Structures are given as C-alpha cells and as structure tokens.
Length: 109
Image (cartoon, rainbow, N blue to C red; front, side, top):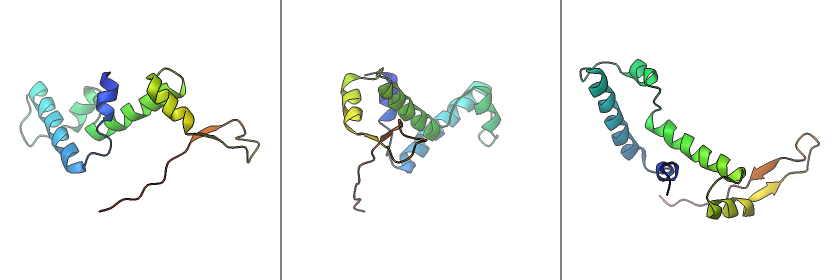
C-alpha cells in the first residue's frame, strides 16, 4: 500500500484525533525552528511548504481520485470508480462530462 493510500485512511476520522496529529506537526515545526511553545508558527509552516493535517488528508484523497480517473490508480479502485460513473447529457456544454455518483447514506448519531 502506497503512502498516498495510507494518508487517505484518515478521511472521516473525528476532528479531535486530527487535532492531535496537528499538534504533533506543530511541535515538529517548533523543534525544527527552535521556537517556544507560544510562538506563532503559521509562517514557518508555509516556509517549509507543509500543509496542515486536514488539508493534507483532502489532498491525498483528491490525488487518489485523480489517479483512478486517469487509470493510474490501484486496479481495484479503478474498477470501483468506473462502476460509479454517471455520464450527464442534459446540456450541450457538459455532454461529455463524467461525474462520480455520491451514494446516499444515513447517519446514526
């Protein structure tokens, strides 16, 4: 399993757990730049070209989807996505557009 796939496993993880990962990333920035606990780190994160944890998770998911749509992803994911394609022919402007169908789900909280 590639690193991209492992990062995408964090989709849907509760925010409280993502925040813990973000704190680890923040501490890493502080260690790299020898910053104090209360120093602002936003500019340091951007100078290192790092994404925040939640943005990185979304990026990795979009990367997997992009690869699958271009037949570069894992075979089992390519096959799953190809089943869920829906071609929309309502308008001339989007006659050849492929769209993914988002399955309906019910949540129990």
